[in-house]
Image 1 (spheres, rainbow, N blue to C red):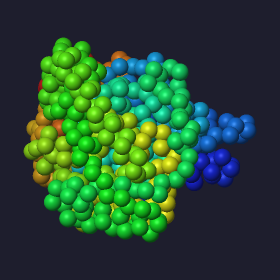
Image 2 (spheres, rainbow, N blue to C red):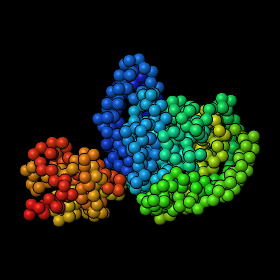
Image 3 (cartoon, rainbow, N blue to C red):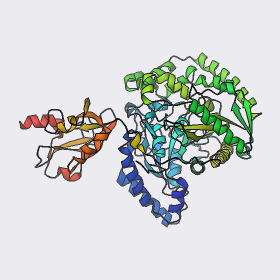
Image 4 (cartoon, one colour):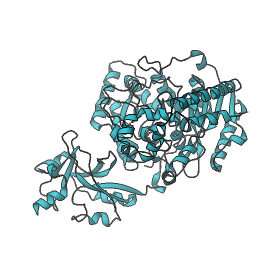
Length: 593
C-alpha cells in the first residue's frame, strides 16, 4: 500500500462542485482503493457497499451538480460505523444475532446524502460500541494502519482505519467513553466529538443513550469542520437533540488548562510523555496562557462510567439479547453488560448524586480556563496484549476520555506526533457544552503550528503475519490441489460453513473438478468449507495461481465474520451443475465416486 495517500474532503468537494472532476470518477478510484486495502485489512469493514450501487449513486450526484444543485460534500466518499442505520443495509452493532434491517437511514446519513456525500460501506467496531480497543468483534480486529501488530483503538475501529488508510475521505464513528477520540490518536487523525445533542442520534443503535455522540474522523481540522457544518443541527425527531447556545460558539480560547505534573500519567510510556511536552511547547508558540489545573474530580467522574450505575444503561440497550441468547455476545462485552442487570434503582440515583458533585467541580474549572488540553490516550498496546488482558488495558486507554460525555463536554482530538513503533500520539482539546466552534478554531491554530501531515502508508516493513483463506473445493484437505496450501505452510483454522447466501456449482470441463461459489443473497444456502491461515508473504503467489473464472474475493462465514476465499465470475456457471443442495464439495465428489 505504499503511496496510498489520504483523501481530502475539501479538495474532492471543490473539484466535483466546480465541474473539474466527476463524482463517478472519484467513486471508481475509491472502489479501487478499497479493494487494494482489503488485501491488508479486510476486517475494517462489516458491509461493503455494492460496487455497482456506489457507482450509480455517484452518477446521481453528477446529475444533481449538472442540474445546478449546490452540494457542499459533492462526491466525497465516506463510511459509517455499523451501529448507525443506513436504509437498505442491516445494522449489526458488531453482533450478527442483534442485526436488524432499518426502514430509514439515521438523520446524520440523510443529511450527508442531501449534501452529496457518497457512502462506501459500513465499518467494524467493538461489539455494541463497548470498548476502546477494536479487538472485541466477531468480524475481526482492525489494526493501527502504521503497525499491524498494534490495536486500532475503538470502538470506532473500522471508521478510523479506512479514513487513515486513504480509502475514504472521512467516516462517522460514535463516542460514549472515547470511541471517537482514541482511534483518532492511534491512527493520526482528527476526531471531532461534538456536544451531546449537537448531532442527531436518531438512527443510532445506542450504547448509553443519554451519553452517546456521533463523531467524525478526518485527516484535517478543516475537513472535520466541513462535515460538522452539514450534520450538526437540531432534529425534532430525536428527543436528545439540543439547540446550540449561540453565545458559546463565539470567541476564542486564551487560557488553556493542562494537568498538574503529578497527574500526567503515561503508564510508563516515555515517548507519549515526550510528545505531550512537545505539544505544550507548540501551544506556547500560539501565545496562549497554559494554566495548571487539578483534574482529580474529572478522573473520579470517569470511574462512574463502568464502575458505577451507567453500566445498567448499556445493559438496557441490548437487554433482550442479553437475557435470551447471552452466548451470542462477545465474552468480554457480555461480562461488562451482565453487571448492569444487577444495578438497582437506588444505585442509579446515588450515582446521579455523585455526578452532580463532579459537574459542580467542572463548572468551577471553566471559571478559570477556557479549554482543557489533555493527552488523548496515555499509551497504546499490541493486539496480543489486549487479548491477554482485555479489561485492564482497555481501562488504561480511557484515562483521559471517560469523563467527557458524563460531564457534558465537547472535544476534538488532534494528531501530535508518532511513537517509534509507528502508532500515532494525540492530544485533545476539551470545552464545555457548545464550545464546538471555539475548539475547532483552536485546533486549527494548533494544526498550523507544525507540519503534521500523515505519511503515506508503507507496510512492506511491517507486513501482517498471516491471512485467512476459505477453500470450498479442490483445495480442501485430501483433495487434488491441497498441496498448494501445504507447500506454503498453511495451517487449518476451522471447518465451518458460509453464511446462507451462496450457491455452489460444479463447473464444466475442469481438471481436476472444481466448484464455483457464487454469492446470491436470498435463495442461497450455507456451504461447507475449510479456513486456512497462511503467511501473507506467500499469499500473493497463491493468488497468482488461481485460474479464471475463479478468483479470490471476500467470503462471509456463518458467524458473520469475513475472510478471503474462492469466489467465481458469472461465466463460471455456464454449463455448470448446481450442487447447492448437497451442502458442499465433498458430498458432490463422494456422489460421483
